[in-house]
Length: 323
Image 1: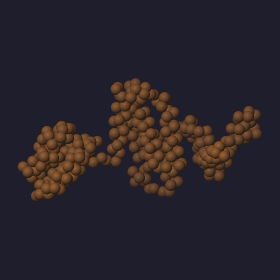
Image 2: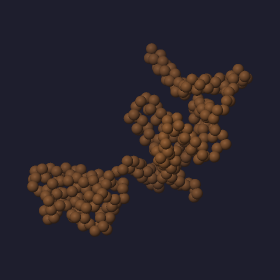
Image 3: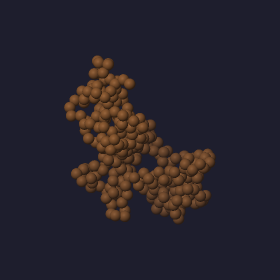
Image 4: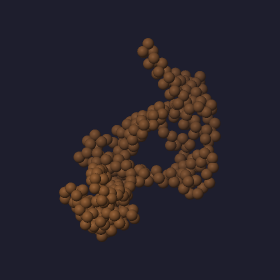
């Protein structure tokens, strides 16, 4: 076997020692060098691997180890030690007989691994010695920010700007992670964590998608939606079809949601007529509700329609300003 230097890269987000079979094989067969002590060096020694710390230039230490043993493993740091890899590559290119350079991934980040970073950063910010502003917040003080970030994500979707959407969803995620971190400080018996949030979401997705997770037969989209609603009703004890409707949403969208919920169960409750109202505000409200009901009958989204008209009017106002 030709002499070789193995740069072993591992994920800092996974438990130390959680390596591939190939990585375990190479660290057990060859001496291992590292730049500093870590949880991984401890785990390798506990498993019987020979691990030695390098005090001085890593490149020369690796070449000396190759000359003595034929092969050596370098435990790359969290950043991957790109400068060392570049230096080794240039040296071995000038002297091709010294050794071969091999990059091996002993473990890698699973999808969603950066969410762990987000949780860790928020924990630092919201802990003693972190950001005083975040530590001073409550669920109530942050409520408006959560709505604002959701609206900004909605604007990005409406504009078809996927780059902006990625950023805005990050701001929404910030709110989720911050709320979860603050909940860890609630009184005993009321506390919950971001894992409780994620766990509840996972359980809900599995329960409400039996056609994916339980082998149930998948029908049309309409049948899947109806099954979702059936499962949802069985999970929650509700006295009214309107229970669970977000009452703080914009009034136009709220009216459409209430009409939709009533229509789902076949309740024929006609909206009030505007002419029957004596109070001017009540008359206007009844008239607007009637318009929303007519939009629903026509299969139109009144919120989207009014938004489109308002934005077009805003463009006209800007044009008039310039003129």
